[in-house]
Image (cartoon, rainbow, N blue to C red; front, side):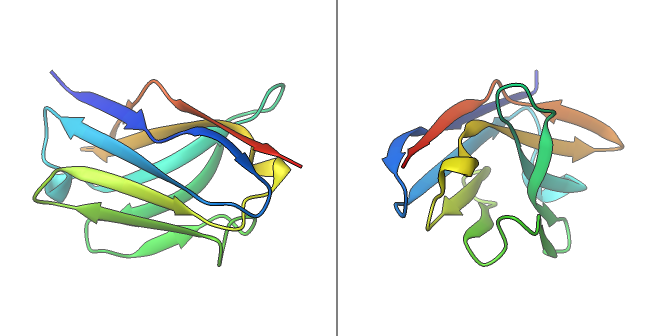
Length: 116
């Protein structure tokens, strides 16, 4: 059974940092097509944040480029999102997604709230 479990969210002041973690079970992230982070703010659609492909290529939304860093630990089967210089507009539920054989697996999300 595939499970993705996010952790590390919380309340932080603007300018602060958080590191989100995604613990994956049921498949090896090394064999995934890509692992990514998405977020959904209240009243808005879920949006792409960052992605790391099987080959190790990194992609970021323009809004988080140079502030957020995605990484993975194949041995631990975990994916991370380091978030720096957080802004109130980063407030959202953050979701981890794994894509394997064109199928997307999602976690339940973790809340990130940035106060001004």
